[in-house]
Image (tube, rainbow, N blue to C red; front, side, top):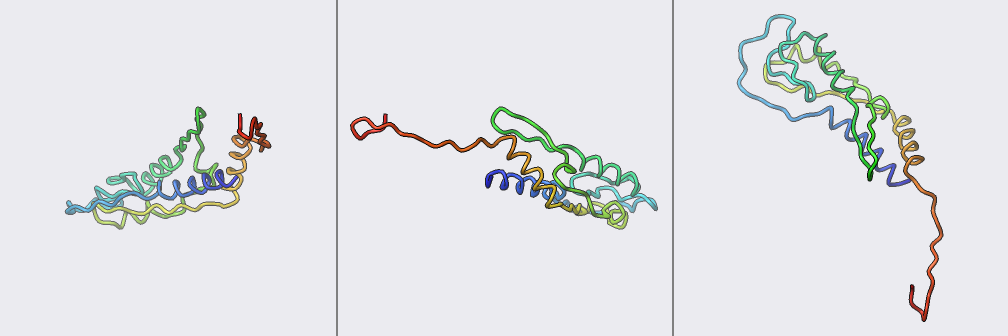
Length: 144
């Protein structure tokens, strides 16, 4: 169970990290037209330069909603951020309109602990096996 809880916490951390990407700064080109986000602005890991705030909101939400893929042994599965208790909470698209070109805007993600626990319980039920008493047979005081 501790292993699965650690996995669930790692999943939550992955969601937070997925919302944060490296920043790039280069010389700024000409200002963007009014109402349009400047070229080179990145929200999380989604380039939104040249988009309106509404277009950026749709693009960021689509990227955020992509399922995370997992593997354990030969099993493969995926889960959406919503299944893992994550939701995008930032006003990044509106903030991005105010940023100069070639800037990075942080994507803030909230995690619901109850949903993470529920997913950890699901993983526990799916992958855990009941404990079995171990027996050792000795022949001449040596295990066989």
